[in-house]
Image 1 (cartoon, rainbow, N blue to C red):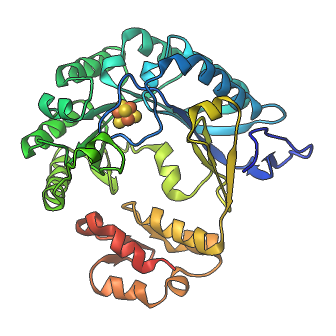
Image 2: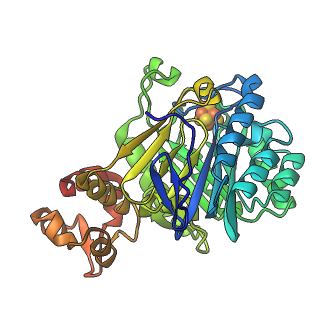
Length: 390
Ligand code: SF4
């Protein structure tokens, strides 16, 4: 563990050096900022979030300090910024502005940067959208989760479907045309009709959709209630969602993500391509694009107190396994040329016989230039990936 006291080397001509992590200046970075506040806690939630909204001022102070520490001597360039949570839209008026002012001082934000803020329907207001617009936000991710009020209530969401629709109308009235939404498969009381309605609404209003199968994390109220989704039903829902989203013009570009008109999430794509990104705020993770990953404490008060960045040095094996695991999540799969450029050997040399075996069994598609998981096998991709890992 190293204390969060970023030091900059005097020689910063080609890299910014943060506690020994060298962030190359020749790369365009993604910046993720975590906002750990929510107005209430959903029963399935295992994310780092709190309903203690009184901590917001102290948290934004600490976050601002962390952001500004990146710009003390030299600036990295960022071409994506993602403010996620938690619920960024429940921050106090002016907090988003403070974050973006600090980001603007510490980084060069590209003119064509993709700048996303996550919102929940109940806290999406005209004033917030005006504030976001003036900060350069050009993409909003609006949480839907379900289109059925009974399902939403069952997992303690505080919005209802009507509020979701009003929030989407407000976004459109305020000229936000790059809207992402997300919903979950396998929630209590959920039916196929709910999935169909989610897709109908997303098809009418959104250019990007994320679809997640519910994971019941240990320790959450949903776990303690002993509710468990039926895997077969969730698999059927997933197939249906993929089919209907495609009928509505969405293309699946990652196992859980679908985009219309090429509006893929440029920020999230950085994670799957193993390129560098910075994680700012409690529980946020960063990567130098090479051998170093770092993570912040998940304790909000400890973060406010200025504590602890944990740095992990990846081995050759870690780097290979991560590259396989992340690359095969995408519809493009793993490019042989990119693999060789990164690892200095061919994918075939590294993966061994299992690669050709998986291709022969129809689990992987090999077009010569790249290798990817067959579309109808993405739901069971974990087993395929494990076979390729070392
Ligand atoms: S809104 Fe998101 S982060 Fe907040 S409690 Fe619900 S699931 Fe968790």
